[in-house]
Image 1: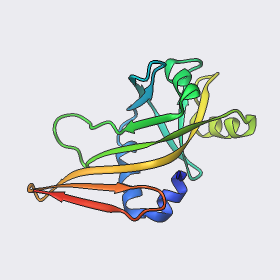
Image 2 (image 1 turned 30 degrees about the vertical axis):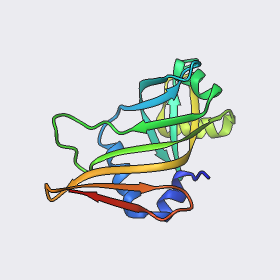
Image 3 (image 1 turned 180 degrees about the horizontal axis):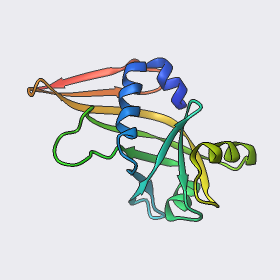
Image 4 (image 1 turned 90 degrees about the vertical axis):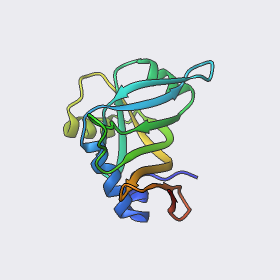
Amino acid sequence: MTANWASFVAAEPDLAKTVEERFKAFTHHVLATLRTDGSPRTTGLEVRFLNGELWLGMMPDSRKVLDLRRDPRFALQANPGEGTGMGGGDVRISGRAVEVDDPETKAAYGEEVEPPEPFHLFRTELTEVVRTYVENDTHLVVQVWKPGETLRTIKRT
């Protein structure tokens, strides 16, 4: 089961706000895709939240584009920032990337973001969102959301 960003926001607005704030705190994040041999590939990436979707824009025919065309599964980790402090915690999103070829959708995205031309555009279908943070310097807290399930919160001492 998958969900778009708007569905996640509707299901868990507080967590969605925290996750979005973590991604908006920095420009570049880490995208993991799968190579032809099944091994992971990590690369830098900018993301955008527009019109109820989480978008991934990429340079023409980059390795990550080729990876996603072959196998759309991805994991995306927000930039942790400098030093040891991660305000808002560590956030990760997993899902499937769906390439968008529709000229009108790409043009509308381009008006908002102004990417270098040409570019590839993917919208995301989420399969999991995870936030990990430390509470009161004593508990590790892991929040896990999956489409169609209630938010799970795990606390470890």
